[in-house]
Amino acid sequence: MVTRKVIAHYAGETATSSEIEVNMHTSYSTLFTTIYDETAPIGNLGRGTHYSILRSTESCNSLLDDLNHFQIHDFAVIWDEDHDTRIINIIEKLYLSKLLSPVVFIGERKGGVTAIVEKEFYYSSGSCAYFRSRLIDIAKDSNDPWCVEVGYYDRETDSVCVSSEVIINAPRKQVSTYLNNIDNLWKLGLKEHTVTCS
Image 1 (cartoon, helix red, strand yellow):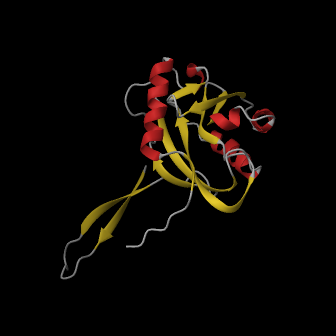
Image 2: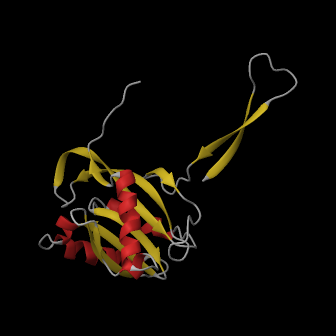
């Protein structure tokens, strides 16, 4: 999280001023809004595990079918100790290829990119295979080619189907609990945009 010092002058103040810290989320991309950002490890899971929540607007549903209106898409970027922002380039390319909407979690660890997608998409005929092949192509085109893993997130059983150590270096149960907690906090995936009036 970037912190910026702002000098605020209050009415009647002449000789002194108060400093106020304003928390600014890191902007990883002009294509996404950062909703929540951990810039360093929190707790002791894996090798420095932490996460950020990014938001995009999507014109496709989670099966990659065109929508007649845009939806909001919140997804989690899972970081390890080095907070390697090169993963953002891969996420941007997925987005520009209209392939980001099924992604719930995505992360980079030890030279590999792991995308965890909606379960329904994972088992859709042909779509997930196409997604995987495009993700492999995108990862190969990066300056530092990475291997690719694709798994699914099952909200009905609160489980993640991917080799757990691929996205986080920890036992499977701990990884599932961690990812479930993120989803419980942020309700990841596609949703309708709502306007709140104050």
